[in-house]
Length: 458
Image (tube, rainbow, N blue to C red; front, side, top):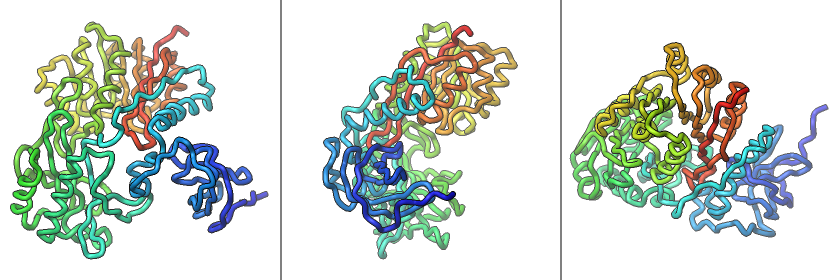
């Protein structure tokens, strides 16, 4: 018998928010039917209007609050919540840190792993203005070129000048570029027609070095008024060290194309992480919150307990951020990453920092692990920092066969972390220390963490 859906579109209900989902939406149950309500917090009594109904859940909008949570912050600029720039911006920072700790605890409990302790989340003193990179779409709105951010779940651009979680110097640079594009009548790219010139403005700024890179992502090789725009950026952005045109002429959702043309200055900028110098080009993957990345990686290195005699493998090594920091404390480090440009960067970064005990290979982590295992490589520690989808089962099996004493798991998705902890248990690895969450992305729902797994005799 088909279940009757107890709510209907455009109807209003009185309800109490019972929980916060991992996406940061309030949860209401109406006759046991879940309704997700943005900008609503646990304990709040609200009037909710149903905006969308699906077979197993609905979405609603707060029409009125009867009571508000003590953890609520009144957000001055509603654009931050609307666009998803700061989906937790309405929650006090202390409560955000607890929410992130609780997310991991809840998933462990569901998997019957509640014996694993989760430490309080390591937060930031100033949990805003932390991002060192911005990729901002450019659109024509009512006849005027605008930069901003898309409304959540749509392609409607909301014009924004102060992005709240970005380095303010980056926000200022974007305004300088926007005004130059307006002044010289450069047309924004139109997704419908595939015509127009400027697609995205990307700005990076070194946290320690203060070096700025401006990347103009264009739909065409030709950039009209190129010299005047370059001169304007040099005059208007005092810290600029590099201005690059990135050509992306495909009809795609990908932000960057494969071709870079340096219009002025250097091809790359530099910044430091844990005392190591990194060269950052337009396509480099580089952590967007260096202060918290240092804490995250330091936690991983401390937990590896290296004394200079160990061999370490770093899966998903990127441009070598963890590998090179670990190399100072290990005998030999091997890094693997599927992106060839990242491995080229990693090798260059090792050379620039005169690190000779780190070797980098291009490949799928799971395939390379199987190769290393077949070659008889015996690591003492394996460090994994996978994407959101977590680890391939074959990588966990190959790790089990190589039998390192320790696996340090740096996670950006608690759901796949918990799944992988269960898979590691089948290989004889168990969590031996409390999990340490780190708030890498304040004001958002993302949570990073460090977990230590050790081989215990079966």
